[in-house]
Image (cartoon, rainbow, N blue to C red; front, side):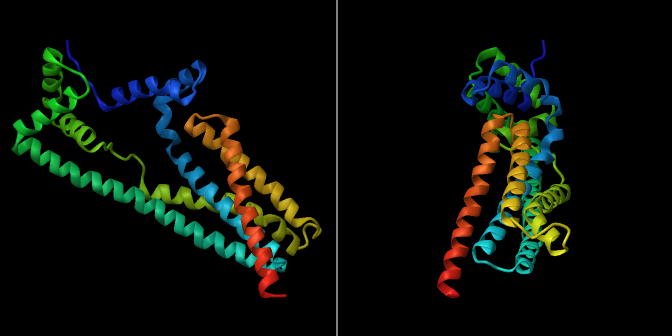
Length: 267
């Protein structure tokens, strides 16, 4: 009987055991495992949440601060768009470099482990034994697991990478991740600016612009919260409430700072 214990199997068992700590009910836990094979398809939705939330919060804060300082609509549009492009690019570069660094680090460490497997196999085999002994395996079962893993060089190196460095290969493309981050930042981040842009071109009457911005920004944060809940298998209510709270807090602080500075520096 062949026994192969891989990283995915260990992670699967770990998440199942931890589900009670995550307040997962039976249906949510079952749905998670049913969708586990399609989980990789959600990877870039994480970038959407990451970029979209930051874009919505920062642009909404810029608009709120400028409104609190009683800036003209044209100035608010200029500040908002400049922030949108600059911060969006900065976020996408950060996402790109983060994924790229992870890939490069994994590649380099994998080369070291491959060298070890090929040149000092006895030492590397003992490390595998130690890793699985620490997981509770003993006797013949431990011997069999070590034998099976070390009979496959690729699996051997993969288990060493996970067991020794707690690393798994990154599946995302740095360029794609950066692109998703940038587009989501622009998409969500542009929403708080829409009432001012539409009013500037006289597509809508220039009344209650900031109130309209607050409403649209709230809807944008609800969207981000819903996507976050889907990606992380967390409570919809909590994810939406968290997004709304973060956005409202940032905008309130920015509005207060703009209002106070306008009073101190202009009047």
